[in-house]
Length: 456
Image 1 (cartoon, rainbow, N blue to C red):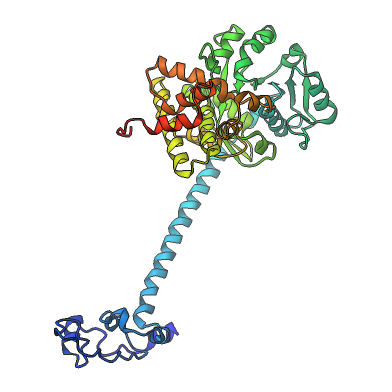
Image 2: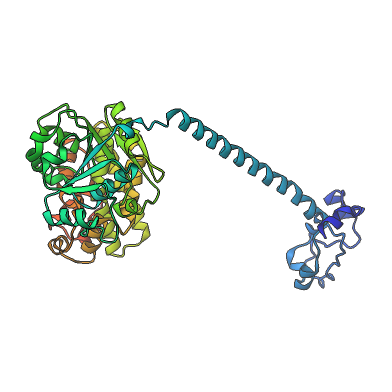
């Protein structure tokens, strides 16, 4: 129908001047200068198939009956205005297509030049310290990268070792997932560390120092340590980049930090994930990237070790706060406000400690914060939800089979903030709630009563 209308000759008044047409029409609609006494309403105008927008614009919507609106066909003006829109849409699609093709070409070109597999080929043995959920997931991930690679998990629980070696399953954390055959568990530190090419450290932060001191004599001084642990040591305020070399008695122990938004269960299910490896040694960061990157795990590199570590530690405390808001049913507005404030507090402290602001807004900062604060799989968020619902902290922790690092990290975070003279209202409130010195309800009232200040 639209095509037919386009072929019809234009009506004689199509190009008329709008105001001239109004003044010359004998059937004027009298839109101006109504007399003081309202005359009878004029009969509604009739419309023909050649009616155009030029005429329609002079008629108020109230003067057109519902039936006439339904019967009115599309005008040639409407049909003609559709053509440029379609052309513009095609142009936009072309621009998007060209942009995507450029991206794909760049990706292929980069991979052809940087697709190095020699490191993985040279790697024969990887040891994983700890048998928790994330340590197990990373052990399985590395083992799947190369079937001939020997992956040894150093554990303290002989029953868990037996389960892994006999059933190829970590029955405690992943009872429904089978581990690769090249994953072996042991309680023998000397055998596990012998001739290892890389070491993945997955022991919780608060137990790391004593654990490492116990195996230090078997650690090669040149063995690269890839830390998977997030948090701050409670009494010393040390981060893992400080704990590992000091506990091993080697200030030059090669160190890499792995962090980012990642749940162990989704890694086990090989769902798309992106993480960051941070090291002051650029070559070591790239080597770790080659070891871990796969079709479902993207690995970016960074030299901002402080920023990645602080973001990874503090986001656990913020997740507890987010859980408290959820448990108290305070709504989405308060959740968004709280997490935004928490992100600012993390940035204030991190930058005071020398971190880059871009790290805090990146994958290992904002990315990890969003995952931990908003998703039910988060252990720290779960602690917060239960606290907000009225449960006691001791009851919550005794019912969990995994460590929520944010609980022990909260006090250390506040001590660190005082050291660098940074005010952190939200994270301080969490520490007070954990110490049982403030109820969640009282904390909310106190936070909402803070001075109204300029956002920074």
